[in-house]
Amino acid sequence: MKYVIIGGDAAGMSAAMQIINYDRDAEVVTLERGSIYSYGQCGLPYTISGLIPSTDDLIARSVETFQNKFGIDARIYHEVQSIDPKTKTVAGQDTQSGKMFRMSYDKLLIASGANPIIPDWKGIGLSGVHTLKTIPDADQIIQNLTKEVQNVTVIGGGYIGLEMAESFRALGKNVRLIHSRPYVAKMFDADMAQYIHDEAEKHHIELILNENVTAIEGLRSVEYIRTDQNLYKTDLVLISAGIKPNTSIIKGTGITTGIKEAIQTNRYMETNIKDIYAAGDCTLQYHMVKEQDDYIPLGTTANKQGRIAGLNMAGQPRIFKGITGSSIIKFMDLSLGKTGLSEWEANKFNIPYGVVKIEAKDIAHYYPGSRPIHIKLTYRSDNYRLLGGQIIGEKGVDKRVDVLTTALFNQMTIFEIEDLDLSYAPPYNGSWDPIQRAARQAMRGLTKTTKNH
Image (cartoon, rainbow, N blue to C red):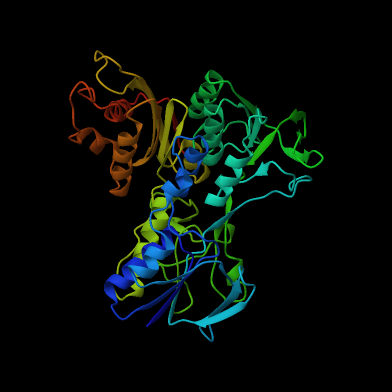
């Protein structure tokens, strides 16, 4: 059987490896529009700061490894431009040679990823204006970060925007972050985002909030950023305005899409067209707390969806159970973790909810080095089932987010969270973990806010 996979990164190659493991007679062709396979995109900001010495360190397996060790027909510079489900063919261009190609498939996986959103601003094409999605993007930024570049502007306060603000600051640059909303990191509630604002101020990162960029100005290179309120001088710009699914190739196929034109699949990663599957950043994800499809493109999900797609394509039935919306990022001295629904999301979905917010210590308060940790839990006020958690602190954030994620996955209540047998020793925790203390406070009725709809 001939399997064709569009995309050579997390989802695509996770699928390819499962196919060759379970179908010994498989002919697997992967079509990658770039030149690099299987690399850690999430590590790109740390190569720019110099914390990771080279972008080469991010590559898990080279194209030659897939070709020679695993027998996969892994092609580079092959950009798919259309799909014909009736003839079961894909067509596109070899962008290196300029030649067009067309090939047939028995089963097809669309793992085409996502593209950075590039706003239609005047001056967007000036030298010194960058986005960050690929290794070549990172290499270009590194090349442009000369000693003469002192003032850097980051546009957008999401995951990449915050990580890149940190990376530029680590290089000793003057960093300004412009964001169109009242607070950065919209995955958090405003009261939790204030800790991020305070951290930015502590490290001399200038936050410009509630301003919309209207133009980028300069002769050949960027010199100024113009917003609807001010003009800012800058030497380099990083645009982090989000990403959009790379799904233009499915036009005319009849494949169903949803949020942001991301591809809709069932739990087996099948589209509504026979023998066509989809996975990764071009695809929707079922959100277990919202109980509906969502679009939260993350590398962990892409790997899971790709693996499950590959298993199903090779005749090994497996379902994708979904996500809880878990994420964590490092911003200066803080870790910012979130899973499930925030308060504003619970309000948006008209869920009867309560919240509890506490400040605690990440380890036993008397043990040297204990640091504050801020925890906010959201739960249903009708049955006390956990809806989500936001945790911000210097240490101990990751393990507590993962506990809450597991609780969400198993639809636990705040009562059951108190009953968890969590590890304890003074260097690692208090006798009651902070998330259990938050759950107990909610149970005592000491919630800061309870809202019924």
